[in-house]
Image 1 (cartoon, rainbow, N blue to C red):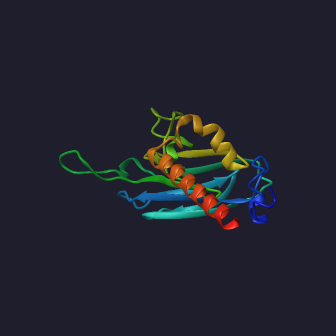
Image 2: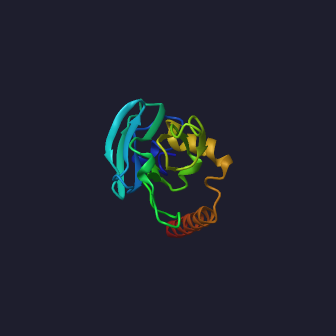
Image 3: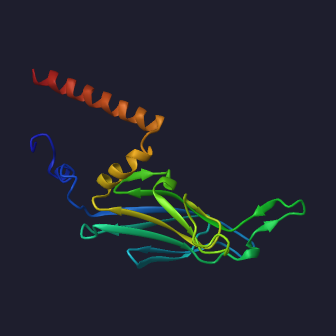
Length: 193
């Protein structure tokens, strides 16, 4: 095996070993009557960001290989009942909300965040305590992402059954990469002879 892989690639062969990696969380915000959404982002109960999301904001969080259980929590903290702007016909023209647009875990880009996260609503009281899959918060509440380290092994095991990777684009990418690998191996074997 060592002859086939570079030393830097060998760490990926034992997928059950925790690895240090980065998590990128791309947030999108929409301005309401009283300004932009404010969020607090936590990694394992430690605050890693507190501030406004003006249009788009990307967070980069380093995760140590010692963190085997990881909980990321994005809290939407400043939504007011009158933040929604409605025109005379009753149509919503502006509303304050925050959305987790994408998450990149260990260099794996995931844009279907709703399959990875749960959204918990704090207010209004008739929705309080309810949760749903998704990536947008229109009411005060929080969104949670949980995974264990190594992340790619966990995501593959848990979310493969939900069809996270079961898209036409993903399958086309697999076919393309497989065909490229076969071509490289074929050309490499011809060079040896």
